[in-house]
Length: 506
Image (spheres, rainbow, N blue to C red):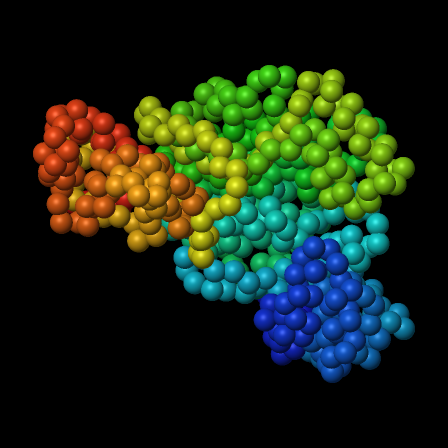
């Protein structure tokens, strides 16, 4: 049952036009972009020039983190009232009203369609004017957006959001799961996550306190998502251990622990998705470390691991020291940087990788083992990369179940986002390079020889793969069996990456 105070808050936010478009209209796209970079001066200047009203008051209070006159706050929150806002823990009130939390609109598009929520979290560095407290509850940041975009969106009975924070992943999971369990080690995070669910009228989420899989012992889920506290932090006195990012383990052990434990909580065929860091030790390859974690897991797991970027030890330290609100060039920043670099040096860590991990409880022997580096830009994915991942998984499973004869009998189609690019020397008849470019998904670029390019170009759903290969063998004057042996593995790869699409199979 929803409280009257939360209902009143929702009513006031809606009446004020407190939406993403409303704020952009209030201070402009340039100021919105500056806010995303941690700079509020452009927004403040635009707000000072705008006509006063409830939207401007709420923007100043909850987005910019500025106190506002009590009369303005009362006008902006007529149903809730200032006393109600204090009771909900949103503000501190005296002669003026100051924010106690960050509250802002959040808009997105997924496979269900467009939606917009309001998300409450703790005040950030801009409002606090300094380093964050260790129990800080993070709002919707870059990592949150990455994971929500990666999330598979197929309907499931049950989902688990491990390390829910402000609850954003649990809210997203509720769009495709009948039941969601959200866990965290922070009682405050769970309170704010529950408030966000109530504020956005989302039912079916159960919030539990505890670390890793302890709160769900003995339970199985069809989908597990986690933006865990994976940041590698020196385990020495004087280095802040932020609850939202530090799991209390040495190095990348938290991600290893998740991999080891998730299989026992996945239903057969269930999928786990998480973000993580992994360390490069000495001359070793970090993806080999991740492969070892998966190979050693108690349950057999399909795996798709994608490294999106790396940072050397110094860059990594700078990134996360600054993330905590400590400004570069200060004695405190220098002290923390030395602590990080001492830890990395002692453990022979030269750099750290960041990326995505998708694990699936295998039915028998695993058929999927992909470990790849996709540094650089992605394709255009309006409804999120998760839709593409789901299509790739389905295509992988379908083609892996077919022998070569069955594959050759299929009539395939080129995906609509695929284009062909040819490079020729001036005056040359034959191209020196043929590239197949994917517009969506991971924006893959596949180098193709004449035979593969011709096969892909002929995949319009009319002819079978085998018929196309036979025609090409005759045209190119090569052995048909040898050409087929060369092209079918490439066809399987193009299917698994969604550059080619399968027909509807019976």
